[in-house]
Amino acid sequence: EAQVTQNPRYLITVTGKKLTVTCSQNMNHEYMSWYRQDPGLGLRQIYYSMNVEVTDKGDVPEGYKVSRKEKRNFPLILESPSPNQTSLYFCASSHRDNYGYTFGSGTRLTVV
Amino acid sequence: KNEVEQSPQNLTAQEGEFITINCSYSVGISALHWLQQHPGGGIVSLFMLSSGKKKHGRLIATINIQEKHSSLHITASHPRDSAVYICAVRFSGGGADGLTFGKGTHLIIQP
Image (cartoon, rainbow over all chains, first blue to last red; front, side):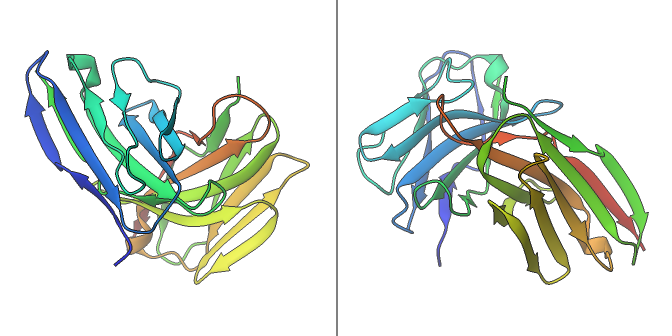
């Protein structure tokens, strides 16, 4: 089944403890991206990647890192999480970037 | 700043009604997407448009490039259509790539 798999689905962590949210797709998509969704603000792009070893900042990249060492994986790294990073996170992928997007199921992160 | 505006923010209707959700954007785009998000959070891509009109079942999406406007229509609405509908665009030209999202329309269809 074609899908984008995010892990974990839920995560509660403490301020400053490094964490990684994984994202993997099995559709050989070139384009992958990360978004956060907050009440009243909607979805906002954090980082995106046009292909392996090519990443770039979106609208809200501060406090996040990404890497794209393999085509299928695009992990989101929070080196020192803070409470304002409490949010619902989505990974998505597509062929190039003018085709329909496939979204992961989301990761609900709480930083206390 | 490139913006995406959706209306209405909230919409409650009776089962069977014809539903229209609107999306307008500020500058030229290369593609517009309509997304659906059910309670519980998962996001599904409904349509991708760069011109004209697309139909899938009871859902119809149209775009008018000159007016910078798109609409999503639901015919014969059903309670299972209750969800948040999100418009997202990829702006053409320079700058950061990727999608810019509207804030969503929260649709409730009552039986």
